[in-house]
Image 1 (cartoon, one colour):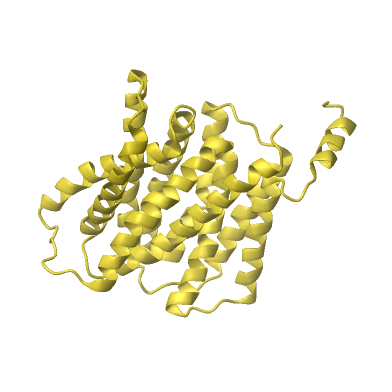
Image 2 (cartoon, helix red, strand yellow):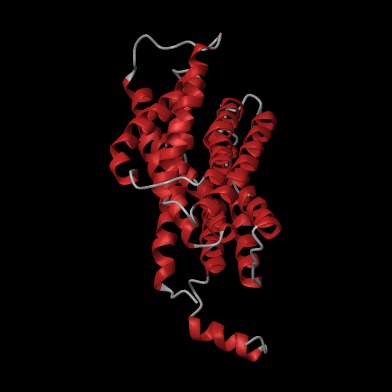
Length: 309
């Protein structure tokens, strides 16, 4: 069994990843006001890939197995390539808060996929925590006011759902790859493949390349490239190397909560008592699903009483 201390660093990494991913909804909305979505996505991937060049000395001893090339290509195709396209389409049609609500489906999708393809198992405690966290995230998003920046919310939410399908496939792929490669190296591969994939899209008709760069949206792109693309994915990939994919994905339910928090800080949005209660349910559900509030001896005693050990 893993000690309780071995859970702390992966949990903190997941908290950091979800915090940064929540901020990405705000940063993308800001960048999209002045730049075409393809410009924003290509820009963030270029920034991330250039930053990864400084990591090359750490990768010089890595040898990729021939049979892993296809899995790495599949990983990068799912995320960032297809995922970022669907996310951009989602945020052009729906609000940041509604898009973040759809992310609560990811733990369920990953849990089902992990059970089918990775033979992972969930305990009753994990399932209960998952249900609470998802219910809290759903209530938090529904309890908020509808944003005026959602011209086609149904279509936008559908695009975000497609992004979650891509994220599910990505999670399964990265879970297998982290057993053989460092999370940092896999994050760099994502950045490089993403830059190669999105840069040619700047040549597509109807994609205006900006002649001048505005401070705030440009800063948002740099933030998306360094903090969200590199740091968040690096933290998430590390956590996946240390824990089950299904359990790690439960933390995604924190994204709507953090998104609403950023909206309050940046856009001065207010919250109701219902939303505060929903936020508490999310935190409680995530903590319960990870067993942070149960002592190991009590867990072992419960198994002994049930005759399982």
